[in-house]
Length: 162
Length: 162
Image (tube, rainbow over all chains, first blue to last red):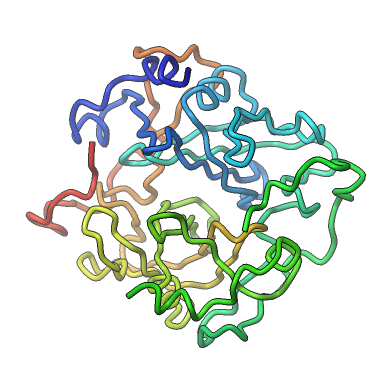
């Protein structure tokens, strides 16, 4: 299924063309996925890291709304379909070797991207220059959740896996 | 080798602790790696996506300089060791399910992060609302290289793989 979508992209014919050319030749990994960073178009804050298969990337480019591939549910996922917090894509970038995507987005409502209820998924920091041991403590960078995940997602299974 | 470093982190005991706790329990994938987004501390521009194993993450936290795991060379890599363009880490964040890292960094010299010679690895954009076909053309967002890769890297093998 996703192979059909992979054929829409220009083949990876040479390192020179991939790095210095203007053709789009994304590199999907052995699971058919490419990582995608999503940041807020206005504040530039990094909101989340997701994965896309060829179908999700195609739909994101064509519709200017973010689609990802859910690894826990193993299917293409229109971000915001459940929560209403869709991501309107303002810019899409691709990196030098074309194995990562960067989306800049605008989000309606609470502006949240994180299923735990925070604005960004990156709500905790790791103290730098700390000795790494099991006693290391993370620091909270967002004090309050912007929505209640129980209210929004109800009994939907939590995507976080151990 | 990297297993020894993995034991320095708190074990992933529950989804609640991983998402809502203050213990650091990064999830390394089946290759022992975790993706890392690196952005410029001042401009907030996304510069690159790299990968870390437990050793690279430990060294990054403890030394406040960016270390990655080079997938092409299969070893821990102190960013800037060849080019001089080391990344001083100002902040490290971890996401909700702790399977991604976000570094905010300052870079000396030309300020570049990209082995092709551009400031950011994301120097090209994909035009949104375009029909995805092999004729799609990328747009250049950075006009000029900030360093000459031949001068800096000489005959070092190019890390980009097809």
